[in-house]
Length: 381
Length: 172
View: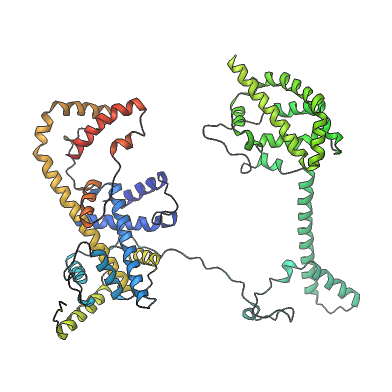
């Protein structure tokens, strides 16, 4: 029996197999233990006289052996707890073994008053140990599961520091180094030193302070830049375009299609013909107001409503619906404009400016639907 | 009450035998590694720092597995002995030739010609030997597995053919 081969096969099997999480002996964390059990059982089978095995049989047997250990432990623990002990001893384990072997039977099982010391099970095991060959396990097994030790901060008392205030007891966890959080403190100290006019600090300390301050300034600038960048670029949609992790997931069989140019163009036209939003009180240019909605459409934020249509839309070549939409959507948009303008305004006033975005999104979705439908019609024709 | 008259000497003997056995486990390293047993015992809630007890459980498990495996080995040997007997008869049957052509079209080889003489632990033998211990395992029939591979028309045809194959192979 080749153990390397076994491992390869095991890996393949593990990849293909998906077990439910609730399964106690098949959880992901238990894979290592089960693999070890498989190797051990395979060695035992080999020692018995088998020359090969089916993987399913080996897995079943290793699973059963693992359950055997588990149930021995459970019964032993039960009897130990019943006797009022936390830790089990030999007799608990023998009791567990007798319990498991009771359906098979062992010598002296019928005797009610038998002593656990002279149990037939133990005699059988002793005999087995004497008869069986000594086969060491093929690998060196490290202790598992590995428990990572968490690094503790330590209290004031453990660190040997005095807490900064009297109201803070010394058993509380210590503060981190003041350089990491004190922006105000260093500046205050500096000003105090200057105002007092005392040049008590050594040269070294001043240099250190300067460095700290420059570091803080740098951090502040970074933070500022980040905020600025976020606001100037509108929202995270740029990130969604560039960052593949923020993009909408592809469905099975779906191919990634480069973003279509049409919606932008189309929505520009829509925007030009539909200046309702500018009237509502938002003084941003039309293109900008629509940009988030367009981008949202592109990146698939409106997927929740018409995910299937989006999928269709992505799969089709762009040219096909390009012809259809422009006419149809323009017509509907003009209708939209003339008839529903007041209603829209009303709705907008109900929901306030916050819902503008949703409104835009809805429109874009409508346009999308139309485009897909027209494309479908074309195909049918 | 069926009291077993046991002398104090006898008890003492058992006592010393048990302690001797446990002491001998210190040197004996079972095939099932201590870490595995420790892990599953901890999982069950049993806690004990004594290595000897862990070894005792390991040896007990080893005994159990070895018994089941040797039982399966006997089943396997019996099956192989039975095959050799009616191998000749089967090879002359017309229906076997039909089965053979079907198997060859699937890229498989003649099961009787290339009879695996090796002793292989199979699910069949294992389930038989486990049943004697009191564990029932049920396996999925082969044609159910195959039914996921073919279309519906193939399935209807293949169920008939495969059920025959299963019968044939299981009697090999």
